[in-house]
Length: 406
Image (cartoon, rainbow, N blue to C red):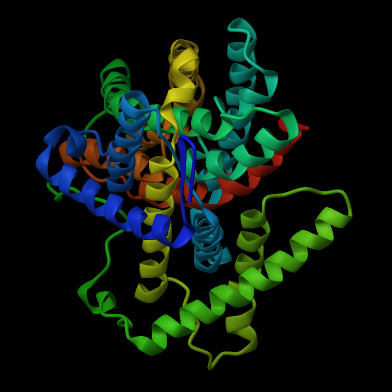
C-alpha cells in the first residue's frame, strides 16, 4: 500500500522478505571474514544490509519503507516458548552452587546496567524511559528483549523511535561483546598466573562431551515436527490466557514471558504425568522451529529499522555504550571473577559473561570457545552460563525492566 512518500509492505510479503534477508546475511558471512571473526549472526548482518537499503531509498528518493510485522511478533512468542519447553529443573541441580552464584551476579548486574543507562540518558538529556533500551533490555536482553519492550515504551511514553534505539544498541552491543571477552580472559590469566587446563587433553568446545552412543537421537519427520508444533501451540494458548489474567490483575508482562513460563511448567510436569508421551523437549524438531523463529524474527526486526530516525541520537548512544562497556569490564574484573572462584574456569566464565552482558548467548559461547581452544576445556563454564543466559535471565530481566519502566 502506498501513501505519498510512505510504502507499507504487507505482512506476508514482509515475512518472505525476511527469509531473503536472512539468506543474504548467510552469503555476507561466507564472503566477509570480519563477520565471522566477530561472530555476527547471519540475520543481523543481513538485516543491517536491508536497513541500509531502506535508508538509501529515504535519502535518495524521500521514500519511507515500513513493514507490517504481525508475523514477526508471533515468531518472537514461538522462540521464547521453545526455550521454556527445553528447560529442565534437573539442570538446576546439576549446575549447583556455581549456577546459583552466577544467577545472583547476573540479577545484580541487570540492576547495575539499568542504573548506568539512567545515568547515561541523564548526562545526554534523553528521555528517562530510554534508559532500559540503552540498558538491560538491549544489552543483556539482546535484540529479542529490546524489540519486545520497545512497543510498550513507545506507547506509554510517546517515544516514536524506541524500536530503532533498542535495535541499534543491541547491534552495537554484539560488536563490543565480541571484542572484550578474549582480552578479559588473557588479562585475568596473566594477572593471576593461572595455568592452562589442557593436561594433554584436546580442547572441549561447546557443551559437555557426549559419547557416540548418546549422539543418536530422534530424527526430524512430519510426526515429530507436528508434535512439537502442537506442544508449542498449547503452551502459547495457555500462556496467553495467563497473560490476560495477570493483566486484569494489574500485572503487565510481555506475552513471551508468560508463554515461556507456561512452557517450562509443562515440560517439567506433562512428561511425568504422561510417561508414554513423546515430548518434544530438546528434540531436533523443536530446535528447527526455534532456529527458524529466531533467525527470521531478527531478520525482520533489523530490516524494519528506520535508520534516519537515529541521526540525532548516534553520538549519545555510542557514548552511553562506551560507558556500559567500562561498567561491564569493571564488574567482571573486580566482582564476578573473584566470586566465581578466581581460577581458570572463572576466567573462561568471565570471557563469556563479557559476551553475554553486552551481546547475546551465542557471543558468550563464542568468547569462551576462543579461550578454551587455546588454553583447554572448561566444562562447568559451558554448562552454567548458557543455563543462566538462555533462560533465567529473561524472567529476571523482564521483572526488573518492568520496575524501571514503571
